[in-house]
Image (cartoon, rainbow, N blue to C red):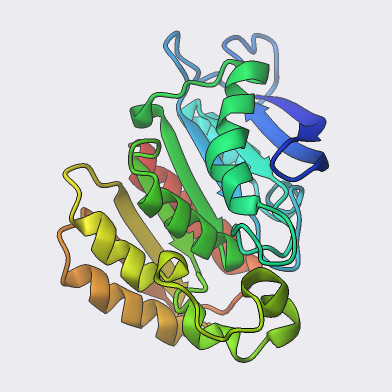
Amino acid sequence: MAFFEANFYSESLGFQTTVNVFMPQRSTQGQIGVTAKAGNSEYKCLYLLHGLSDDHSIWLRRTSIERYADDYGICVVMPFGGKGFYTDMKYGEKYYTYISEELPRLMEEFFGISQKRENNFIAGLSMGGYGALKIGLKNPQRYTACAGLSSVADIRGWTSGCPDIMIPVFGENPQIPDSEDLFCIAEETNKLAVKPRVYMGVGTEDFLYEGNAELRKKFETLDFDYTYRESSGTHCWTFWDEYIQYVLKWMFE
């Protein structure tokens, strides 16, 4: 694996931002403990989103994502998403536009990452789980699969408890629009001929468990290729380091 930290100007955000990228290395002859898995065809790419308190570096620091990705010969793109819930904020930046439209275009420009639907995947945890499910469901022409771990699944139920965070994102009006609600988005995407595969994982002791359980019930009424997994666990990196391995296996095997 090659690791890149790219700093560039984002037109969507209006400022310089950073993205961490792992790219497969086709030959690693002489490198101890590493066997190259990269093929000669276009690489599959996972866009991996962080949670509310973190940044583009956190997956690299708290998990072994590089080693896991190397096993599948995939590239991984880890962008900075602020505290914007991967939304075009009411009082702030356009993180939805940045992640869903501009970033893939720039990754193709900078690294030659494929734009084909069958080669693009998105996942995230907590706030990033909400973002990954939302972006994946709303852009089925771009992503073939999306996964949320310990996601903020019920954004309407969660908003009322964190006004200092949510008012900049959605404004003072407590009514979250249908276009930002995963339950409504899933219903709309369900009407389409082409839909992404969907994965959800959550710990049974996680404070977001109930919202995930309710979203699971919604998906079970819809016509998705849908996978759900739960086990004992809290909202922590021990859980996410374990579950990102399940996600990669589900996506790439």
